[in-house]
Amino acid sequence: MKDLYLTKEEAIAEHRKMWNWIADRLEEHNNHGYDIYMYKAEYIKNNFPDDTIRNYCFCCQYSTQEVDNYFENHCIYCPLLWGTEDNTDGYFCEQGNCDIPVEYLSLFNSDEKYGLWSYAQRLTENYCYDEAAKVARQIANLPEK
Image (cartoon, rainbow, N blue to C red; front, top):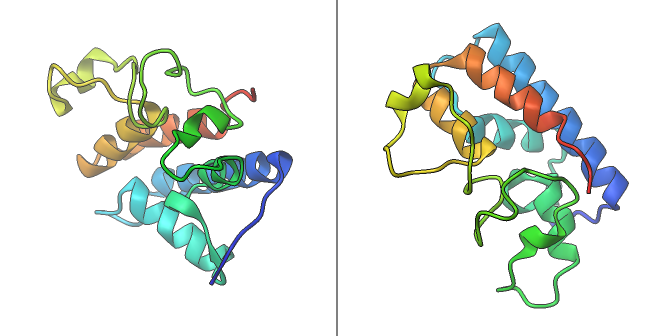
């Protein structure tokens, strides 16, 4: 296994392909019990079997290439805008503020704030595949920095 080197353009293109593929799978409802992490792992295994990709995320892979210190927050080098950059020191995809529709608030602890990845993950854990597919499409189409 080797680390996959990606340009910014390649990372964004692969990110969009993977997340649209995930949204397609979610819309099909064929893998009951699958969550976002499992879909990401399956996509990477099937499409990049000889490569190591950090967090099964092309944007994470790209951003860690830009960091000299392993412990530095590599999210600041993410090529996409998640909308949580000003609200967290953690992973932009997992933390910060995410507007959750009222009908899905019961899936979350009242004091927790989720980023889009965490929101989609929690939706799949609770079998809300149609809503998770919408979030996956939103992730696929995040604006570039």
